[in-house]
Image (cartoon, rainbow, N blue to C red; front, top):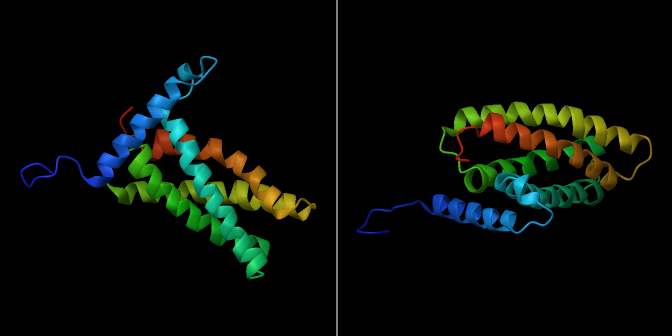
Length: 162
């Protein structure tokens, strides 16, 4: 704050620092990867790696701890983790200032498509054919990462600064 007027909100300041850190890390990537990997891709990977860990933790709690059926455990863990992903990516990674309502609507459509195709489709199918449910979720997570980054960068948070 300067003179009682904030220059940046805490979220904006934190988002700017996060983006600056991603730019620094990308510049240090070996093998010319700095020309290929956008700072937002690295930020997405870090944020979604974290929220994927939250997803697996919740999945374990709901499936092994509470004994919920796999599709229900996948669903609850997925919705909670992706809510966290939306908030963190919007504020820190893409630093979007567009109205949150339309973005949340687009995000809901994207996660519904992602959920049906990858979580229930790939994840449940792999579990049904005998793959352990954590491994099924990891395979499904690899598929969803490419889809969700693309949708978040070029559709949902398209107002974000490059």
